[in-house]
Amino acid sequence: MTTVLCVPQWQGSASGKARQLMAGARRAAALVSADAAVTVPVLETDGDKVAGIRAFDVLVENQRLTRKALAGIDDRVITIGGDCAVDIPSIDAAHARYGDALTVLWIDAHPDVYSPQTLPSGAFHGMVVRALLGDGPAGLTPEQPLAPRQVIIAGERSGDVSEHEYLAKTGLRRYGVADLERVLDGLRGPVYVHIDLDVLEPTAFGATCYPEPNGVQPQRLIDLVSQVDDIIGAAITEHAPSVDANPDEDEVLRQLGAALTR
Image (tube, rainbow, N blue to C red; front, side):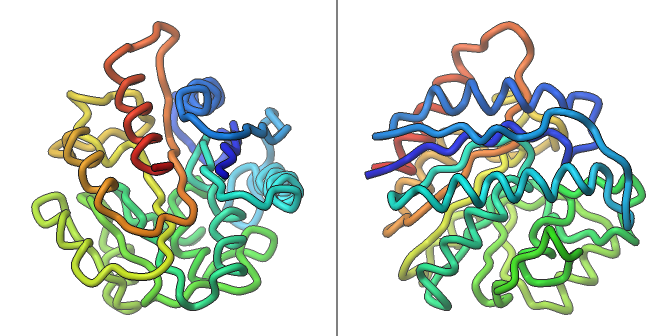
């Protein structure tokens, strides 16, 4: 059994298109087939910058609401965002269930390992992987962090000096677009697959807040996900569509959903 958990949060992003993430979450959730669907009633208002993080109190409350929704779900969960920070409670729940055997495959154009001190915008979606590793603010960081060996970053092609220094220090496994399929080598046990849609080539899928050139073609990503065994949970995040529907992008979301829930 699989449940789609729609979390239409936008406040983790500082993009001018951030509010489009609300509609993007709902549209993507409707395109992923599952046995049940739950929408988290997240706050839709903005908030103040606290401790270097914009909308801090709103994000804390949205995490609480998401954890409350997860507590009532026993199925495998496919989390649909919204900005990528929506995935912290779902990954934390998977970690609680599967322990140190869990691997998180973080597929994203960006490594998301900024800190409040190194990201002037305070956009928390740029700090999520770092928070999952336990290096983040109280209220937004899991009590049981992942170990660096449990995280693989794939499709990365951005990031600044501070992020690259942190990645080198932690020893996180990283694969770029050119060697994307290498993530499959030795990938065993329960796997949680996180997809930030800006990993895709923007000329093929442009409905994201922070598109990066030279990305992964949609079919290549679908094929990659289809080869991952034992997907125990997953997420599709950062969908920021325009008002007009894009049938080609909708089809990409359908096929990604099918690959994740097979």
